[in-house]
Amino acid sequence: MSVLIVGSTALDSIKTPKTENPRLLGGSASHAAVAASFFSPVKLIGVVGEDFPRRYLRLYKRHGINLEGLQVRPGNTFHWSGEYEANMNNRRTLLTELGVFETFTPTLPTAHRETPFVLLANIAPSLQHHVLDQMRRPRFVVADTMDLWLNIALEELLRLLKRIDGFVLNDSEAQQLTKEANVFTALCKLHKLGPKYVIIKKGSHGSILSGPKGIFICPAYPLPRVMDPTGAGDSFVGGMMGYLAGARGSIDTHIRRAMIYGSVVASFCCEGFGLKRTTKLKRAQIEQRMKELEKLTRF
Ligand code: AMP
Image (cartoon, rainbow, N blue to C red; front, side, top):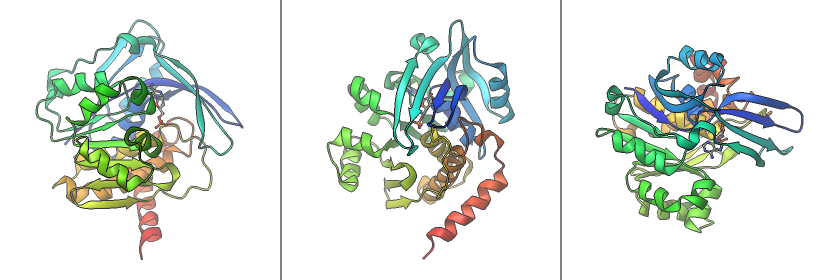
């Protein structure tokens, strides 16, 4: 089965204490789509401007990503810039230029509306609603978000939570939304807002799922050297959704393994700037790291 992914399609300029990389291929949907493409067919919904390099379009295509829902509009591509501190964890946004995103209305090609798996990657909740409005009875819908939407679009986000199956957010966002410092209490409060599955990401410390079968602690792959963690969260959820779409059987049967696959793809994402490492990845390398992670967590 395939997965439909909507989110930002961006040019990212990323600064670290050691280096600066301008105008890399980025955006929540780009990271998620490439990650998902290792496991199942992907349909990308987004918008780019006329400045979007053709080689990036070729990169999507090399991953077999369906681009019928990617609009190319007059104007500039969404441009985001961030700077990391030496610990490669703390990040501050230097610039957000919406460009063609300012007037973006995602219209789904008719054939896309039947897609069973839907990932509403990080983007304004109003656009996530707009995509969901066009879908015909999807099997499994997961949404991601960021602190910005908690600050400026909370009502729309809360309305969205009542329409989705799974919600993915990081620990500081969970704390902001629930006013609860304990992650397990926060998970309970988040279920009350709607979603049956809630995943709280904890960066290099992995993630925690709460669902109908209880709690699952998902490890992160231990990386001695992080080049650029931008998009790791998107790669995680993209890999997870791609694996779920490609697996037969119930969500509960596969979601734990799907999270581990997501975690593995996210680890590769951190090893290169932007999508540089992920786009060179081979399925066999994913499987190798899966085995290592299995050994590390067996007891
Ligand atoms: P993450 O590292 O998982 O937080 O995701 C980083 C990605 O989010 C980058 O590739 C950015 O292009 C994208 N991004 C940053 N700000 C926004 C925003 N306001 N809306 C949508 N995507 C964004």
